[in-house]
Image (cartoon, helix red, strand yellow):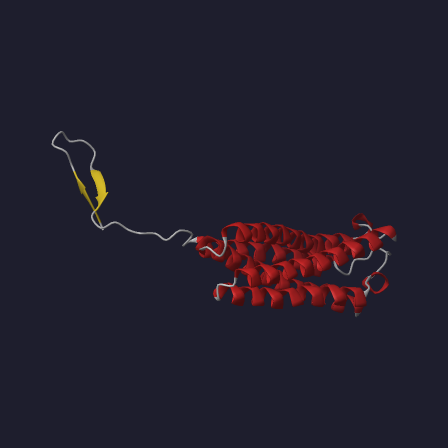
Length: 209
């Protein structure tokens, strides 16, 4: 509730609060992060649309059947999906105030994310080594942009996770750190959902073409 008053000299009104408002620290952070995730959804939706249009244009080059190593991709997919489970355990320990348990589960999550990222980079290396570079065909351009953008997000997630581990180790499970863990949880699970779409649309459907 606010009010205003005008001085006798006709000066500009002065506004003041009759009842002071208290705003909890970081109270708007989850809402702001949801807005960010929605913008990220638009980015990936655009990349999926581009791949849907260009994914069958091989330009007489290699097709998904000749390039994709499904067993390798299945292992990386399992690692990423398992990391969501370990992150869930970290959230449970955080809610119970178990600092060490939270750190351990977050570290395991980061290691599984690193395994996924390493296998993705290994796949990229093999494809480029075989001459399947992005400029060879529209399919490869769309593939590298879509999968590469997701890998870049995982990289940012791992960096964020390591930073969070340092913050929890030094300051403990303070309210600010709890909110950061919750935001990273939303981001990490979002990446899992996006990867399920990539695995289905790019790899499984690509092998059927």
